[in-house]
Length: 478
Picture 1 (tube, rainbow, N blue to C red):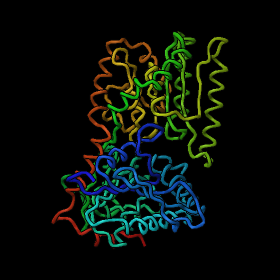
Picture 2 (picture 1 turned 180 degrees about the vertical axis):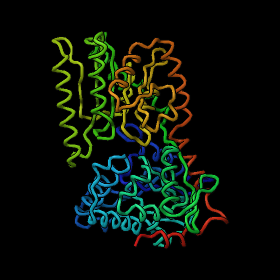
Picture 3 (picture 1 turned 45 degrees about the horizontal axis):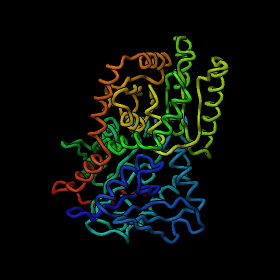
Picture 4 (picture 1 turned 45 degrees about the vertical axis):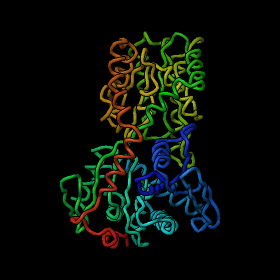
């Protein structure tokens, strides 16, 4: 363990990898960096099912100073906790898609049960002076359950996706239970100040709490810190990826594929929160309204399949494929196919090369906690010939990347106008905008995110804050 640091115990639904070479997402990249620097334990689901489920024997891998410990779920737990409550109830609700959210008592019960079981399995592994850092919408109740087990040390929580407005969150039957349970954490982190305000407003309006200086919230006798900590990437590392041999091969492949045409790129999981349908329609409007682009631009959308067991995702894939076929059928020639969609994933090095070959990157979520694609695209650019980032006003990254072309993804005309501006932007303006965004990306790195949160967690708690163990009794859902 790093000298001068408490042991870090990270909890997330999926664990690892500890290296940044493959297809790891933003959460994994950020946590692996902190754990490698500090040493500690990473605890979560194995990714496997077994008849014993959360009662299964734990498996532990050791890499350097980091232990990665996982347990299984059984089929009922996986269906109710992950596919049910986490992804049919919480994910759409927190992304402002109340029309897609499904609520049922059985998945609610299993979600709480899995949180309780994970806490019971983690508790014996904890030491009194550990810093426990719980991640994402899978584990809203975990802190409260750890308090019920008797843990009195520091526990922090970070939500990687948006926290929706109170008017929407109250539609969740267990909304009060969830937020009261969250008060067992010492520090609650969000991606943006909007998310933080939404949480604070819920505490005030629904639970009778009050806002205190220093981004603290008091509910009853309990005082917690609720603040924003924007997640970043390993910017220097990603910039090195962009000039690696693997990146170079993919950059050359893309440039060879498009020839003299300008490349537009989109990279997203296939998810209804990403604004993919709206993006395709904006590209179609570009070809309608600015016909000079026909034959001279090409749009590549990389969209690895996501949660393909859920009906909403099956319908999205079908809609996107139909829309892509419509656009290509309308505008393609023997020499040119305007839009290509790939549902396979790429390594992060390969993506860095693909980003570097693209004149424009379209990042158009309808709602996103942060969106690290935007930051990766900036980090990957050639300083002598950088591309242009088009960014949704509803992405958390907008607050930091103010020199992107900011658009309303719901406006087809807005997307088309931004595409035309990006495709025709002079080199000097591209450089000026990129240099400003690069400075932001290299300042707000994954390491900065980790250190900012963990420093706040280490110093949280004081004479004016209610004891965490006592707060847990009040917060524990009945």
